[in-house]
Amino acid sequence: MSTQDTTVGLSAVIAAPAGERELAAELRAGSVEAFNYLIALYHQPLFRFVARLSSPEDADDIVQEVFLKVFRSAAGFEGKSSVKTWLYQIALHEASNHRRWWYRHKRRETSLEEPDAQGVDLGSRLPATGETPLGQTLRHEQQRQLQAALRQVPEPFHAVLVLREIEGFRYDEIAEIVQARIGTVKSRLLRGREMLRQAWQRDHAEAAAPGYRSMEHA
Image (cartoon, rainbow, N blue to C red; front, top):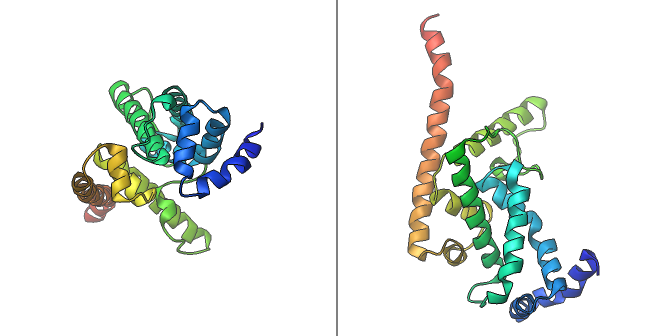
């Protein structure tokens, strides 16, 4: 059975209120069709999520590891959370592990100017400000700056920011994913927003400083 056939066959299951339980049961039973459907449904969202937490260059390998762990642990999934938050919980764990490894080993420099493989980054949430080449250049520069500022926010605040501000999860869903109380999630979100604001201002101040100094000596 192809992925397309699997998606069509299980679409009704997902749409129904009881579909979440049925899908979870199929996964626990080792259904290949349910697992293929899960990949077809969540591969791209998880790729974008992981790319924002780690790096676009490594996102594909991390997502493959995520689904491998899902396949291996599906039999033990008890359904205490939704399948979606369960997937994101595993993805967060794998991406966080990779991020810690990257900072520890400094294997290579990651370009903050490049979007992920799907052409999506934090700045893509901003509305277009103009159709002229100059307007597009300015907009892309702002996107790059936002992405760079976000990457300066440390864990666990970085993950909560991405889950809430970009992925659009509810507070209770984020609490399930990060395994914390809702109050803790809200606190991390407030602190994360402040850290992002400070990083944004710091980057702009540093960018403006050379020009300001050159004007002083002109």
